[in-house]
Image (cartoon, rainbow, N blue to C red):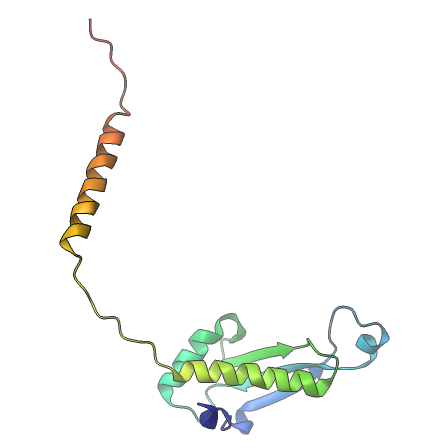
Length: 137
C-alpha cells in the first residue's frame, strides 16, 4: 500500500498556508502555520473505482467539484502541519484502494425463525391486552 501512497499526484495537490485559530498568543496572530491542502480527485492519476470510493469516504471534506479539502493546524510549525495534512490524505487514499468485501447472502436458521415468530406472538398478545376495558354484567 505504501508504494501507491508515494504516488500522490503532485499536480492534483494545492497547498495554502493560513492563520490557525485558537490559543497560541502572538505567534498565532502573526504566522500562517496552518495548512489547507486541496486535492483534486478528478485530476489525480487514480483508477475510477478508487476515485469514487475516495469521494465517498471524504464525506463533508469533499466539495461539489470533487476537491477534497484537508485542514491541519494541530502543530505550531508549517512543516509539521503540512506533513500531517499529507499523511491524512495518504491514509484516505489507502483506505479507498481497499474495495469493500462483497456480502454473501445467508439463510436464517430454523431456530432464529422460531425465535422471531415467538417474539412476534408475545408482542401481539401484549398489544391485544391494551384495548378498552369493558365491564360485563
